[in-house]
Length: 228
Image (cartoon, rainbow, N blue to C red; front, side):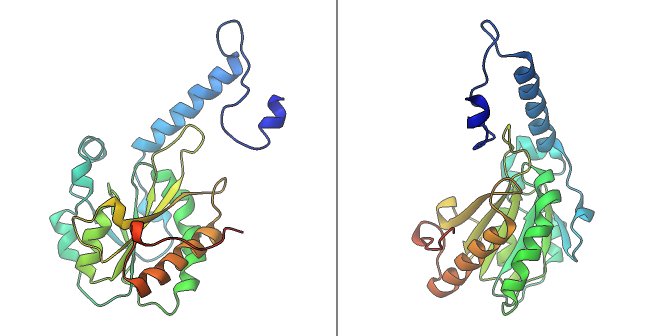
């Protein structure tokens, strides 16, 4: 039964037991996955992992420890980074941030962009930016400073015991500081074992098109795209 159930999910099901505890192999696997999740949270983002021209920015959090202790600092740019952005007139801005899993960016940001950018050939895109120690809301400030009508933030999600490198996408129309999560659309679990890059790109492109027409995102923008 255990082998049958595990064909359908990486979750911990039918683990068995040894006396009153887990079998040794399952306990060791849990400890390994827990260690990988912790490592993902503390790993530093390698900007060179993205083989595309981009502008490297930093949040107001000066280091990883401060970033984890002060989420508010990860939601806004450092003064130096603010000064590097020039206002334009763009349909959209794409922002990459480490979030809580730099490995997610290392593994999935590039392939996702490869699938997405051909769908946006007729869009006026702001310069691609990457933010060190960034949270989702930092995209609101970047989008406003760049003069983008909407912003999509590709960010490392909180690691799970079976998914230490999951990438999330957050789309916000009319970005500006103070936007709430209710005003965003989210596509979660973009990774090899989750939502494939091509499907995630199609979903995001659909939402961006709808946002451009309806001038809203979040709870006011429903997704009608079929997943098949």
